[in-house]
Image (tube, rainbow, N blue to C red):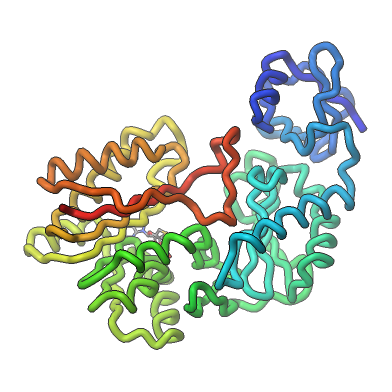
Length: 386
Ligand code: SAH
């Protein structure tokens, strides 16, 4: 194993529980090559553990263990088994879930999602990419899937100088698979579509939204209809709105598969559509807002917050006393406090008083490490208009 030496600052960062070491804190890399497992040594030569080495990214090292141990098949089997054990405790009524949530499962750079009998994996750094054969082998042994697909067509791989591509790694992969979640049957578009069109991270929030939803409901940014279909049994009617005709086709297929009669879908820009409904003085009892991330970087935070404030303001204009607002943000850089802050401002501007019913986050199969803030990205507030 090659040894990479790091600065005092990097050592302190590891001591604070974060597994990343940046290029600027690497003081010597020896013969280390792209994707290798390396021993990490502090400025005085003390072994700090073992890591995946990236020759391209600003994040040069991602720690795999704080022990000086071999990272081999046995190591990966142990980490994967622990990840699967956790899912057994927290995933119910679903054959679709996230099996591995990268740093959240002490496997930085690796995402594994299960959709029924199929696994969709993402190797997000050079180290995990180099380990793909052994990882596929371990997953076959532990999960026995019908097929494993690599969805490596993601932007972050560019930072690692890795190609963006999708390829079948084991078995066979159909165009789409029917998965079961909270009593619904949903279509997972394995080969295309964002997150295969099944938003695993919202699984628990769907149930929460359905618990509070009532009357006439509006689901903005509905995509394949996740919130809309979950709320249908509790509501008189639900309208789902999205700009993507492809997502809406999946939503309609999901509606048909579940024989739901009181949900309609409409192709529209949610910002404009909400404004138009308010101008026409239309009222709803429940509104869901689950937009895409408005920013992926801290530098755009102010613009993102203005966006969140605007849609929440527009949604609140449609809700009278007793109305329920389910509002989400999947921007990592927008904290729950910041989201609550703009929601409070929007409520004041709209002349509404909001009571918080639930403060929620991503489903528990997307585990959060307290010392790794990047593992927490989804916020969901459920509020009632007084
Ligand atoms: N709520 C969905 C997931 C939403 S993902 C679920 O749980 O299944 C975000 C969605 O917002 C995407 O489907 C995208 O097409 C849509 N979108 C992006 N900008 C939009 C806009 N301005 N108006 C309406 N939909 C938009």
